[in-house]
Image 1 (cartoon, rainbow, N blue to C red):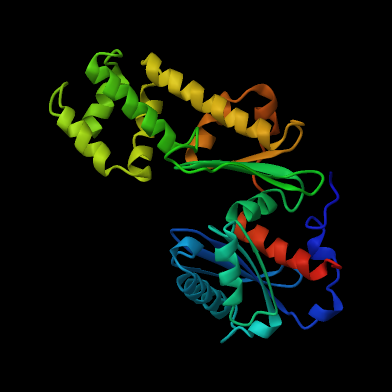
Image 2 (tube, rainbow, N blue to C red):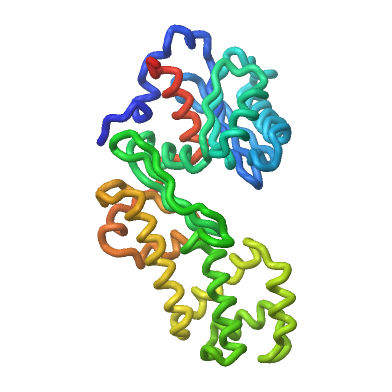
Length: 314
């Protein structure tokens, strides 16, 4: 379990065809921003940079523009006026990289790096969190997804189906359940407890039968709006059985995710996202016992991914 090519990436020699590579770029890119780390081939950090979003679903040209902006900022901080791309290899963990057409189009437009390795940001998060060794990551914040690198070297993804019909245990999912409880309470199908009343207030209801306010809120609400209701569930879980039941259901959903990631129930787990971290203390003994602090993040994982590719005798 301790032997994996990515775990030993920094100490492995470069393939002969990559001996001209002097720099490595690690990229963590999503829908809100891009983070870049620049290192030498031994893993020594040289500089960091930040720019706008580089999720592939928002456009290939925008992704490369923002990545290169962040790369040049990192290079400038390293005292390099302009990074020589022919002497640099880049690893990227990008949102949307799992869509084959988007990934192919992105790689086809790469601006001249000596080598490129592209993966989903969830994959690089797992690699970074466990320093290239087998392990899993449960990310539950606004949405929910789990990814794991298993002992046999395979990668697996669980959940992450989106907030409308999936992402169970996430902030948006909790918010949807809270709104349903508020609607039932307004109809008389459920008790108008503290959670329902708090949701009515968040939706701008002027009285207990203000259906218009609920309908107007739902008509314009998206993932983030529902996620903003999740804190109300936690706030009232101590006094409202309906809120307590939702918290318990969220725990059960994330535990099912953990079991699907690793049926052997042996891999270390890293938790990211506000909801996962808030629920961690409520996990069952085995899952709670396997939770560890991440050793690195997605940008670290991207660096390790590309360094492993340069030394992999493929």
